Image 1 (cartoon, helix red, strand yellow):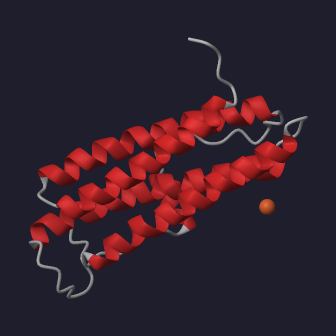
Image 2 (cartoon, rainbow, N blue to C red):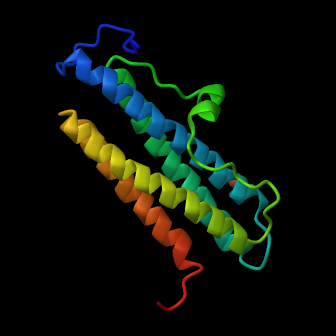
Image 3 (cartoon, rainbow, N blue to C red):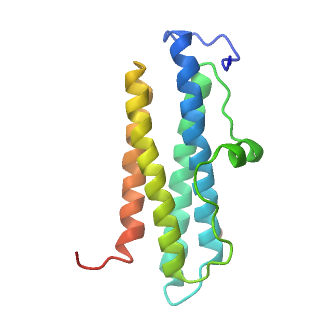
Length: 164
Ligand SMILES: [Fe+2]
């Protein structure tokens, strides 16, 4: 399926770009889904840790939103379309649906940590896929995304940490 839509002057072969754009859009869908999940937690969390968690969840949403922007723009740089509509994201995300009934900080932390870990893992897979295709720059983007996701996962899981 042809996915480039404009005559991008990018020098990577189109055969490579045609495979990188869907890879970017898959990660974009998860990033946008995770952004919205973090906002859901930001808005709905209750309990004694409200102030700190309300802020932490907004930081997660803000960071993921910035990463989504980078992923989307890379698709267009390569001649493709960034698939960031609600409908496209709903159809493409690989994250489990966020439970709308969650209330406590512990439950929101657990749910968001699981989704963030999932996203970090798929980002690492995307690094290898982009590198195999010969696109070191996209591999580098996925590397920075995975590093940021790892940091968010640490912040989310440190709240509920117990001694190993
Ligand atoms: Fe807010």
